[in-house]
Length: 190
Ligand code: SF4
Image (tube, rainbow, N blue to C red; front, side):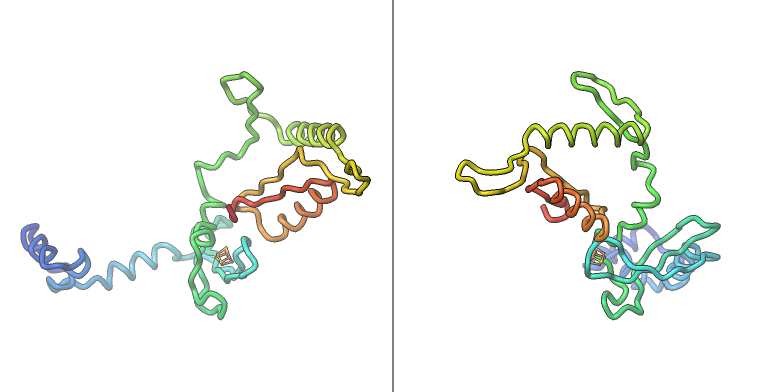
């Protein structure tokens, strides 16, 4: 690898180029570094073809895993749908699986409390169901004043998350509409 001084590097950059073009301009080949980075990321990984779960475009992905753990997800260049590209949401699919910042427990904060309390999933689901049923029963409108049948409640709003996939949203719609809930939205469309 050719040595290049800080001053020479700055001079090349000042000439209007990028850091990469400055290095190439100085006679430095970037090929070995790029090849090594690509090799390290998916070396020894098993490749599983898949489909991005998020929207109906259905972009194809390649999931790389080592010892059963996902190490990388990227677009599949063989797909005529996306030709290897992914939108920002699809490109972040890896972080849906591997993300130390993602809460993995149900957190509940009681009214007026300052701290969050960890709840087990069963307890949380039972509480959500209890409040949904109670609110629906107390606010359900069968008919308007003019006698028109509407069978709805406007007191519950359903907001889906950006990582909900097609199938989940389909079931969510059926459940919410079955309860008579009118406002149904998904964060991805806001
Ligand atoms: S990558 Fe983006 S456009 Fe493609 S299926 Fe996923 S969400 Fe839809």
